[in-house]
Image (cartoon, rainbow, N blue to C red; front, side, top):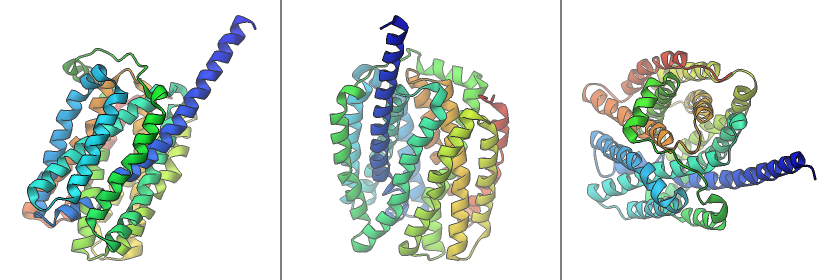
Length: 400
């Protein structure tokens, strides 16, 4: 066989192995997302059994500050003991945190469980980022990331109905226990794929301060970070405060909210793959980011404006909000992972800080707002802040 054909054959074999590995990671992402999403929409209502709404907000601030500190330390740990080994450790902490929440009977135990749960789930998704990026090619980043997030969002779609069912036959505790049980198949898949998932990446050696400086002075990295921050600010409102607002302020039951929350997540399945393909082949990311943020801003204003528990109306608005979120999320991922690689673990970690920072910003705004105004005014405040997103979209350079 001629040398060029041997090279081509080797490339094809490698590409096929990478595709097979990605398929396994997609399945892993689905199970992990189902586990992490099950408590998501009921966590705030569960914690309100122990504390007031303002103290609940402080719980989320403590948990996300702890997450940021953990993310800062995470790259060095990965470089020292490997992403594969660290994933197993974080999974154990994650399972322990869920089991501790099933036994929580006072504010202190609930706080400790919440902090460990929040930190570990954020770190697990960084582990997954590194796994996926190590098998991805830049030319197909949009499609790869869109498929990856589609499997994640399948888990999110299934979780509200399942969580509502578990609450109806038992309690909030049963939901946390079911999440912990799902760690078992995750462990089995990771053990089965240990040869493929063992680290093959030569990580960059940049120091944390150097990476921060480089990201700040790179307008594309700075812009996409703030875009991610604003999206997570939106998520903090709809995950923490919309369930409380609809359940306690408007009196909607979990038997109604479960199906509505599952329905509202369908756009993540319908939108992200086509958006990723369009970004790869035709438009680039900026146009889709503009569209997504325009929809998000309008949806947030409607959250503030609608004051009646009309089921079809809330279902429609929540569904529309996730169309916008799906566009922004897919383009956030596509854009960022087109301009960095798996070896740039420090950049990935800082980028993922946008998640806890968005939650800290969201709950801080909630604490301040609730001192003077009813909860629904939080959505108006976030609507105004979301208008800044268009400036950050304008600041980045399109990849097409």
